Amino acid sequence: MDLQLPDRERITIAILALGGEGGGVLADWILEVAQANGYIAQGTSVPGVAQRTGSTVYYIEMVKRRGTGGNSPDPVLAMMPVPGDVDIVIASELMEAGRAILRGFVSKDRTTLIGSTHRVFAISEKAVPGDGRGASQRILAAAERGAARFISFDMAAAASTSSSVISSVMFGALAGSETLPFSREAFEAAIRHGGKAVESNLKGFGAGFDRSQNGDPVSIDAMALAEPTTAAGRALKDRIDRAFREPVRPVATTAVARLMDYQDAAYAHLYLERLEPIAGRDDGRDGDRLTKETARHLALWMAYEDTIRVADLKVRATRSARVATEVRLAPGQVMTVTEYMHPRLQEVCETLPAGVGGAILRSATLRRLLTPLFKKGRHVRTTSLRWFAVLRLLASLRRIRRSTLRYRDEQARIGSWLAAIDEAATRDVAFAIEIVLCQQLIKGYSDTFERGLERFNALMLAGRSLSPTGGAADDLRRLREAALADDSGKAFDRELVALNLAAVA
Image 1: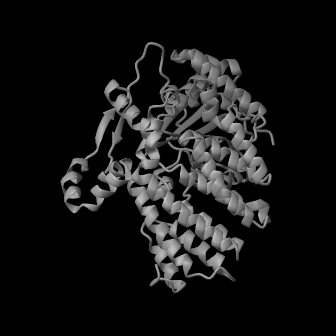
Image 2: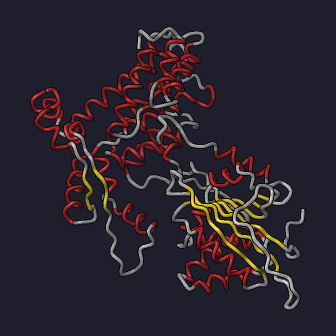
Image 3: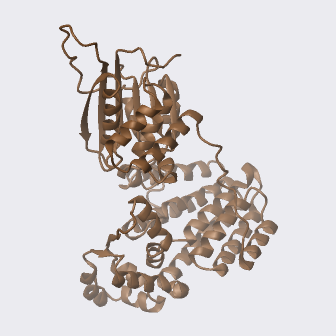
């Protein structure tokens, strides 16, 4: 199908972009290149209220300018895109591409869809107890089926790599698609006419143009792992190679690197010590799935997010560099970062030595006196010397983490969970895997962690009433999926009733 448009009298373009992504700048560039090359063009925008900093539809309609003379009036151009009447759709993010498809802007017989494959997750996706992410693969498949031509790549990554902005990458992708009757030089002239950040915008434009014409480069295997560079790392790798079969080794290697960063080499060895008995129970089915799932979820749990970890991550130089890159800090500019912090008395006590923290939480009098001190959160400037020093001091408590109340409690919970997995695996590996997957409820910190832990405990208690034979694995899976379905717990309660386990949990 020929999608070139040099002879079309009228061309319509819809841009769907999130707030802060330069959708308006992109629309202005398109209007500039059209008006400078013989077209009458009009652009409009309708801002939406979304849970991802706002989502706006920009609409551009252009009509070829007639020759001078005659009585032909200027055309009357539309204000909004009409389903089935859009030649080009540009989406700044994958879910925006899906939104364009749902609204009927993408047609199989005429529309070129240019979309970024990266995701900016909505609050509704993040708030789900389980995996609430939208079905990205379904959107990609729908785009392939529904558009006359689908051009896709990670435009946010291309913008970051080229030290530019995503709007310039999208403009380059549009030019590279060759769906408009203008030369590359005409597009670049529109950027220069804008007069702002010309060099970086041209760099992003070039990246988008090349990727649009040549596609994505060959991706690197995400599991390709660097060789350890320290004696401790080599010792851990040797232990992994001896103890586990090939399917498990990449996961275990990634896990020990994370746990060394979280605590130290001894903590990583504790991880392997816990994992090895599970590997001995694995029957090897599904590529050692029992061991792989345990390896992944055990690492996630052992690297739980306490106040020490949160402080450590906030004062790292790599984080400051990332934030500076994201805000495009220019030479000579000073960056300040203000964050909202609201530690509860519970989190403060959990950071103290187990004896001290436990005594405070057990004392009704102390809790009554101290709780008001932590009622309100505060905004703190973490780039100031004062607050940076406070966070750095808190992060240094990693050396005494093993003595804290939170460490004691988490290790006890992990031990009970592993014991349940080990016991179930002696009779039914599928049931043991379902027990492993219950760990998905343990995540985050503060209220999020408490809610997940409460549901996890209820799930494990109900699971003990299921005999690990017959359909027990399926029953526990149904319970787990219901527990992850919503915050209210209604779906979980319904499943408990259906399985006659309401009284048990």
